[in-house]
Image (tube, rainbow, N blue to C red; front, side, top):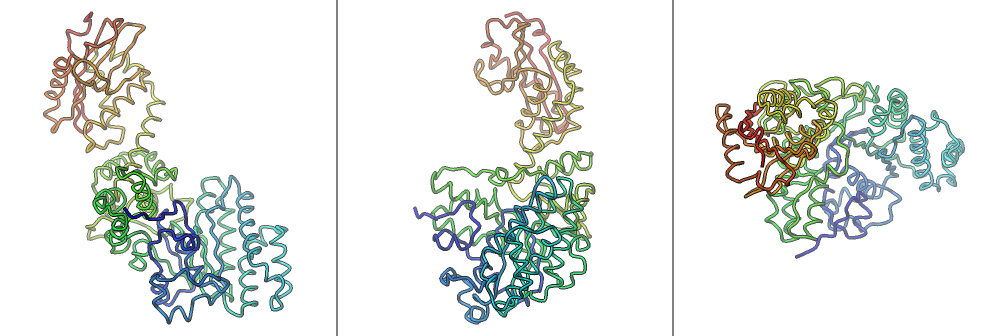
Length: 561
């Protein structure tokens, strides 16, 4: 089997190419971008883990007049366009910076992080301090930036001054590449300094993008398009390319052709179905099959080390997925029903508003659904309504698992805050009517995912019993089979067995609950109870959506072994 030299977690184009790592060629982006007339300021929004940083580092290596490595683009798509290479390759001073690290518990901490980024940029271009063509006053400011002897107001002009110095030295305007431009604002909203950060970003970006005569063009990337009136005020030279646009639809993420090529390299084309189910399903523009590249490469990396490796929710393990949690916590009936539909692979219809402000995104349902769409937790359905709404679906198994994980976590928290001791008392007293009533009440108030069959109800009931303070054992070997759930109370020498069934129709509930009791008897689940257990209660419970039926063997209420 051939091996792909995959760099896990790497987003540096130069490093990937120098180390001959696996690279799926997206350099045709340059040709497409320039053919559009390269807008003076372009904002490209895509979800996390879709190659935004890698794309910008590729642009830096292509355009930067200071780049030395000429063979990084050898045999790649853009190298075949001789006219573009002659006009643009290593022809312009280029600034690349990522703002993904500009975060902190307060505004001062975040600004210190930004100052450190500017300090590194000045250090990389220290030749400007000795240039004969750079204005002395700009040199003085650059030196202060390098020494960090600056205030917030100075930092707002830092990119403008650096662009001026680069143009003065090279005699050419500057290409500015800013990655993850919205991270500082997102972090500020979470930590309570949103207004201060918005003010800083508005002034800094305004100086660098609006009043900057030394700018050739700028490309910004992020997850969200933040409303123009929020930080892009007065910016008339601005073009946004979002996930709904056809432009660059196949340049971020992997296409089906890309995935087929990777699997052909490792001679595992039979894994295409797994990758489709878990990591495909994103729709950018009219592209029907866009895969998350981070996940695909992670899975191929694992397959090369273990041919039997199964897909995992790699994305879930690299983020706290706070937005899904916030959606779940808004749990009104309408949102609850929509989450249930999404998990059941049914589309929901929402009116999206793609210009957002972070301080309101969690306060309006429409903005929250929009953010779920822009950050990759939802995508457009194949069939769209004939109105202004957008039909949204969960793209794949990985994201569905994230939803279920957050729902389960929320449910655990809810159960920990409820007093469920009366439920425990009713179970031990054999009060099947009360047990049924209580379970139905909680089922109605929670989020369900019924297509998981009995597994959802098993987890639901187990967590409910734990919340009632009972010790739960699941899927243990007893008698001639495995019991669904067993609880024991050694102090009072008693136990209860629960066998669960899923009914196909509401009318089948009673019948299925009775069948569960029959199974307990036929499989002799009570036979292997510890010797000290004197009383065994046997519960048959059947579920249909948000209804259940509960039956108990009357003769077992005081059965002594």
